[in-house]
Each structure stands twice: as structure tokens, then as C-alpha cells.
Length: 165
Image (cartoon, rainbow, N blue to C red):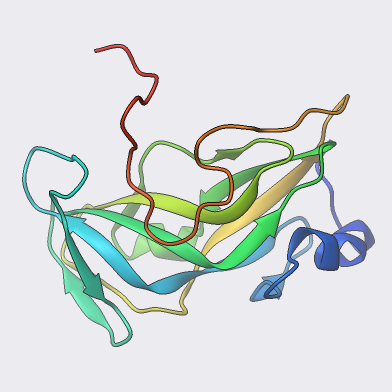
């Protein structure tokens, strides 16, 4: 079940122990993008292959660029709540696609990381409300203990990632 309304307000201090969300909507929290990203303009996305740049000022990105970014907000989900991070529709209308991961496991804590792709020439600026975090009640209790727990900054894929080529 989606957590909404007064329950979102009741949970805000628990979910966001360091910095409060940019906005609390009827059924989601708005999240902001941090001031730095990693940009890839080639075919290979591997650790160390991208360029880390500042987006404190509005920065232009070009069609086909792949961007790793993270939220300013640090979240801490309890073991009975899962999350789904979705790109805000206004960002999609500006030419951004949120590629790949968006599910947040119960018990996860850290900054959330975006995998973005520019569908056209577009811009980003640190502090922009870029995503919504939707929370769901889990039917039981579970705790994420993966390698990305506690992540901060632009966390790239780590060695030993569990994908089969």
C-alpha cells in the first residue's frame, strides 16, 4: 500500500534524518539533485571512465550523454517500508530519462543515485527538485545489506557487481 497524506508527515523525521525533503506531496516526497554529477559521453560506463563536474550553476548536457547523479537528501528506510524513486514529470518534459534503478529496499540508508540520460540538449542545476520518492508498506520486515548501503555521492558500479554478462 502507498503511504500518503498525514503518514508522510509523521514519517519525515525518521526517513530523512539529516536534511528534510524539498516538498511533501499527497503521496510522495520531492528529492533534489546534488551539486556534482559524473558524465559519460562514450559507450563504456565503467568506474573512473566518466568526468565529475559541478552543476552548482545551470549546466548544459547534450543528447546521448549519460549522467550519474545523487540526491542531496540522505534517507533511512525502516525495515517495514520500501521506496520507489521516479523522475518528476517536469524533468522528463525537459528531455531527461531516468534509466534503470529506482527501487529502494527496506532498511536502505544513504543518498539515492540516479542514472540519467539526455534525450535532447537540456540542462541541470544543483538543488533542482528532480525526483519523487514514493513509499510502500512492506508485508513483513526485511533489511537491505548490499554494497550500496550508506552510499554518499556519485556512487558508481563497484567491482563484483552481481550481473551476469
